[in-house]
Image 1: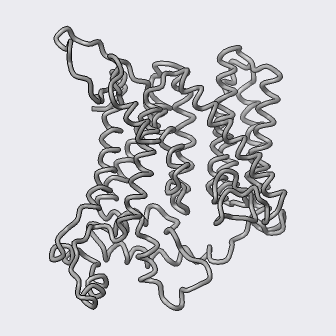
Image 2: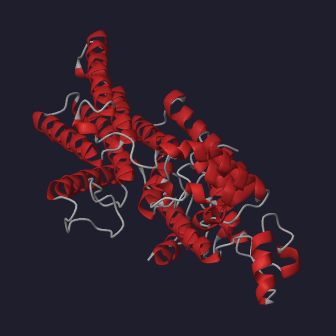
Image 3: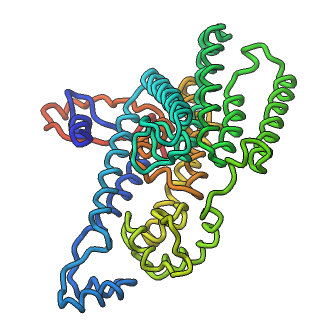
Length: 430
């Protein structure tokens, strides 16, 4: 399905080329290339010279085999990640082709999916752990997870929905100078559903993100157009955030919700794993173990004292898992992506906007993306297919819509094929 969408998208239809921002395009191609390079077969003599292959070499020597090997120690899992990356890339390119109206529609649809996921999470939580409403066999069956299998990922997703409610109201204000009563009711009801659903996730990160999202949503409202005094609004907003912070303190200390937001078994030990994770990354420098290989590699380092009923399928810290799986090249790509985001977010909040509508979309996307960036320090939201596609769409909204160039007279009869060009002049980076 993704392959069909990509072929339809990239191959020219008529005279309309596919255009994406050059820096973002280079980053995507670099990420895909890094994964592809990890799958290139190497001769046994060369493969065994790579750091960290001693255990694998010893096992092969025992059976008397010398097969070719790739940088990735788990090639099939790396292929799975490549397919997920291609899905996200296709979503990014699709989002980058949308004009302002199309992007507004996309954000509205995403917000609708968030509300639907919140309703499902509330139903799952109410029906209990044995509910047939859970979509995955391995899931947080004592919490609301919505369309996800991980409650923390849903909480992050729904926190972004609170931000989008602020964007949606700002759009309505821009059209009429004041939202209608029905629109305020819909926004309030959606906000209540999202907050209740976040509560059902029992996610501490989600609770914190929800409070921050309330502030982000408030920041998007054009108070002057609505006729609200800025000082009164700041006092009221500050009061709401203070009450929210107090509620969080009561939740985290177990005063409310009977300790449901406390640390689960094994979670407190994740911090103590940092030195061991750094050691694994060091052992496999500079090329890493291959994306998707963390589970298998960590098992070979796990000591008897560290064994427990649960297992560590991911490092729960992207900023440590990327050096393990990608080596120094992954770290370089990560830094480049963060720089790209910082520049785009800075432009959304500080630059002179070409369009107020586009500017509102970019600011909302920048705020929501920040949740995923921060959350990745303690979890792995971008390792799931759905969240990766969602994240890629948000990244596409950070860039301005593309403007097709006029075809020159000398280009008549040019063969069709994929093209990638620049975006709005003056807004793309060279």
